Length: 248
Length: 368
Image (cartoon, rainbow over all chains, first blue to last red; front, side, top):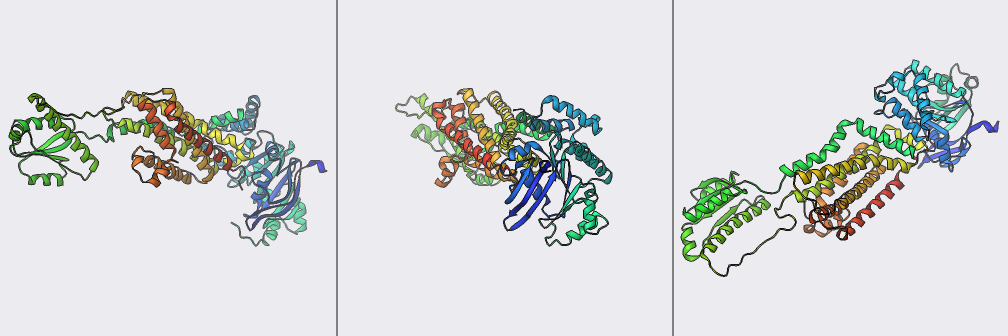
């Protein structure tokens, strides 16, 4: 079992001055898992995720991503992960195709690979006709699916999604989760933060953060049994009520 | 390398897609050169003057005709009494008044001596100075002519030669200034804004998570603006040579080399600003107030640095445009070579290395 741990965190902590954003969190994520990282706004989800991506240096504790240490092997981690931020992070004034070529380029992909992969993604997203349109002219749902495709363009082993479904309608969210499942089926590990509780149900395992600490970590079914709740929504409410930190 | 090229290509798309900004960047130097060249000139032409001729003889008539013929003056009015002068000045009708006393020609012929009064509107001291100089020289010309006719011995003439710019053209002064201003604006402000924009859009996060080295991100951002600047340098030089008739007396390659060096200094400054600024407004504000104003005021382009109080003269030394302005003037107008401007060149090179190192060091690899 030890070999298939692609992310490990042990007492990972991040302080900003006196404020402890992430307080000694520990967890493991297994290969091919969809790991849901839940918490209210301000609970520390994004900070925790940024430490794992190498965007932020932990104050103390240990963590490895894809077997590499977050303190020392930053550069190797960067090559093994994909990342999609809350803002979808595509270039609005570039076309769909140019965005893909750009991201392929900065991940050192060959021209041949970029060409084939671009064609495959455009086909899967049914965007062949729109490939030369500027991204800013696309609807939000399409941008989001495109951003996910771009995040896994270089076929990383792990992909981090930071609240990827913000502001998107339920139908598109459903389609988006289908894409996540497809990626997980091919062995990609998904680490996703969200505060939509229906999405938590789709995850293999879920951790719930309250005030910088991981309060619960289990499969959705087990969590509902433990907290005697009908849905993940209830589980979350029971835990989040304990929060003292005001949501921002 | 492919990584770097992909990034540069993307930057060109950004510039190309934002047509309005692109036209401003490429059109600005042309418009500035034309405005400075034809509209904002500090040469005084066709100033309105009034003449109060109390003598009305051959000499005053001849002198008045010469004033009118001069391209500096237009006779607006012939006055009849001294009281009118004040009124004309107050109403802003004239810049200069010339008063011939009674018996002007007689005095000149009999005593070899006559007086003319020149009254100037010194509300604008520079113009007043210039106009009285022009007027004096017209009168001196006349005096020389009649002196020669009479073949009097022992006349001493002072001969003034204006070196490098015999016609005292303003263009010789502002072409180097506009070059410094445009390059600074395009390079410093635009690079600062474009990097901060990526921070605002959240795309910088993606860059930092990617295996692309942050130093490469910074450098790739600068490349397109370097090329834009080379286009601008070319258009400014072409316009000044062919439209404003400012010659390039020195080595063209040296001039272009120095301009590129100054461009690199400006780019490094832009990168440095972007490493500290968090919003596009901040970046723009710092570039304008922190860079643009000192360039206009302390580079010597508008106001001579030599006349400033010591503290300002010291501060002016850290303004890169001051050194560049001095280099361009020396190379372009005086036609000297690197053996004269090596010191300024070294200072600019040092500034570039300093700013660039600071920018790369301060560029945050991590968000927090």
